[in-house]
Length: 218
Image (cartoon, rainbow, N blue to C red; front, side):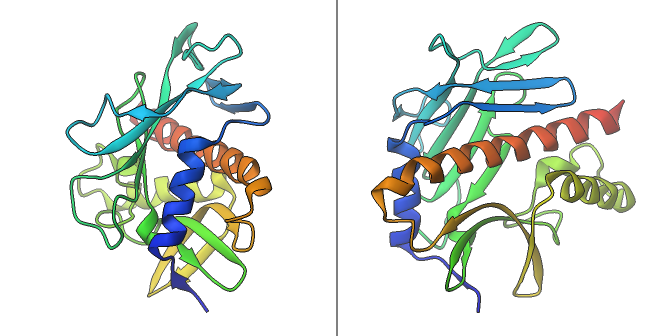
């Protein structure tokens, strides 16, 4: 039986994001984009989303520089913000944004108060039933206005490319972006793996959203 996660569980996920480091490199290639990450910066107060109370860190390469995303012979930074956002949510300060100076300060967003759990796992999700509103991947549909046929095509392409599972919860379909074992969440030795999977899966999803939109616009 599915239910939403609670504040304690969301706070633990935030803690992992804010405190952990990568225990192995991340390499992601989507079309012409190549992301190579060896570590992350220290977590500090946000520079991109003031005045919101958010913590921010950057992805780093093996030289500890933030040029981690390669596109057409140029390098771009990628960063994560965690905390308060511009609207009220079920849980407090549980918003995650992924950004890049190649795209936008918040290209991809996760709201942890929408994460779902069962007796075994926590599922970090995005809404793939709605095309706007809570949990929807709104940026996937940019530039399409009321063209529902193209929106559905982009949505289908994202789901097929991401290749993950779909959960049905309260009459909506939610694609699983990352999964955390419920018993692993508070185990210290499991934190590096949880962090690695979150970062890899969220940025893969982000790059898919960006490339699907770019390719469809050409």
